[in-house]
Amino acid sequence: MQAGARHAVAVEVIEDAFHKAAANLPALTPQDRITLLLGESTCLHIAPRADVCVAEIIGSLAGAEGAAAVLADARSRHLEPGGLVIPHRAVTLAAAVRLSDLLPEQPVAFAEASLPYLQSIFDWHRGPFDVRLRVENPSADALLSEGAPVEVLDFNGDLRTEQRTATRLVVTRPGRMDGVLTWLNLWCLPDEEPLDALHMKTNWATIYLPLFDSPVPVAPGDILELSFAASLSDDGVHPDYQLDAVLRTADGQQHHGSLESPHHGGAFRARAIYRALFPAR
Image (tube, rainbow, N blue to C red):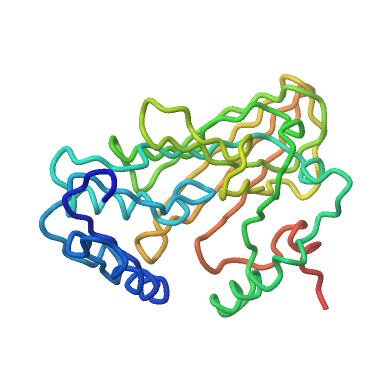
C-alpha cells in the first residue's frame, strides 16, 4: 500500500501463515484497502482484475515451486490485459562440476541442522526418496565450465509451463566432473541487474544434480551436451525435471548420464551419491 496501490489482494495457501497475517491486519490503516484470502490462487476467483501481480514462488530451480503454471493462470484470470507480473524473469543456470570440489575440506554429507527438515519432507511424502541436493556456499572457482541457461521463465512474455532446452557446456579447465551445479538468476524488473544466487548471498540455494556415478576426467574444450526438461507433474502445477547428458572428451570418448528429479516421490538410493548419503542398514 505504501507504493500507491488503491487496493491489495493477498493470497496465502498456508493456513497458519494466513491466520498470522490476519492477526496483523488491525494494525494497518486503512484496513479496507487490503483483502486477505486463504487458498490457492489457481482455485480462487478474484474481482476486479488487478494491474500488478507480485509473487514469491520462485524456486532454487526457477520453476520448482510451480511459478510457471501459477503465474500463467494469474495472467489469464486475475490480471487486466497488459498487467505486470513481478518478478519479470527467472532463469536456472547450470555448469559442470564435481560434487567434492564444491565442498573443499568437508565431507559429502547432510548438515546436522538439516536432518529434522529432511525427515519432515520424508514424512510428508510418506517415505524417503532421492531429494535434490542443496549445496551451501559453493565456491564459484569449482566450476569446470561457464554457466548457461537451462530453464527460462519470462513471466511477462512467452511463459511456458513445460519446456525442454538443449545446452552445450564447454569445459574451461582440467578436472573431474560427475554432475552439474544449478543456480538462480532473477530479474524483478526488466532493466535491473539480476539477483545471482551463486555470487550473492540470497535465500535461494544452489542445487547439485548428479549425472555420473564416478567422476570423469575432463580437459579444456571437452563438451557436455545437456538436455534439461520440465514437464508438469500429476498435480498440474509443479514440474518434474529430466536431465540427459552426453560428455564428449578430446580423446573421442562419450559418457552418457541422466537424472529424473520428480516433484514428489520417485526412486530412492538409485544413484551412487544417494547410496552414500543413505547407506543401507
